[in-house]
Length: 333
Image (cartoon, rainbow, N blue to C red; front, side):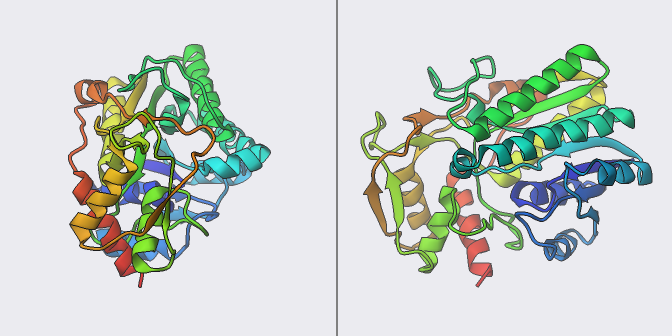
């Protein structure tokens, strides 16, 4: 029996593939390669000694998905495939609704047709919008400040309604905080298209000289140094949370679970820059810029529910995240 991983060639998905292959799981990757490269297949094999089955198929391609489910005995799906750039989602909302929401509906329809009723869904802390307090717990109300976050809320609601209609489904909704770092092999990591929208790839590009300086958006937040505070989590810790969630669904057989995946510690932008400089002995040029619309003072998780129910907690430090990201960037040279 196989695990289908949508978006398995992307940043987070590829790290999940590695962890699962190393646990001797049978893996099938579905990815349209819109934000990844086919060459990553060879890297996955180099790390694990195993080559996963790969299909270049879009999750909106119902016929293509149907063929995959017909050709393989699939027991679970881990659903990473999504567009994720917040700024782009504001500029191109229809693109995000079509890909993220409609694509998920197509995937769920095919799963239902083939009686595959176990899914781990990649959600986001963006569903908390502007939180009323921190740390953030899973029972806090959801809202969104951009179309990307709205797509995640909509998909979560679809999954809740699906479970309400058929409680044989096993559904795990995982709300990510700020994912950074890279695999310690230095072979896979975060390679964004164009100018990075996430902070760590931007820092590493500044460190190499490929970008002139980092813009720190705002220094007047109500935080210890005036810059925004976020919960940074290592990508390897994050994907291990998926495995724990899948294990629980396999044991429980059915259910609807919602968990935060974060460290529970908030670091400011300047904390992250200082940690990177100290860990890697390199200076990062930065400038203070104006706040971005929708940015908030602080956002970090209360991960206690994940610890209690999934037996999972983040183990890697901010120094690990900075070191691994830099080692990966250096390996790209």
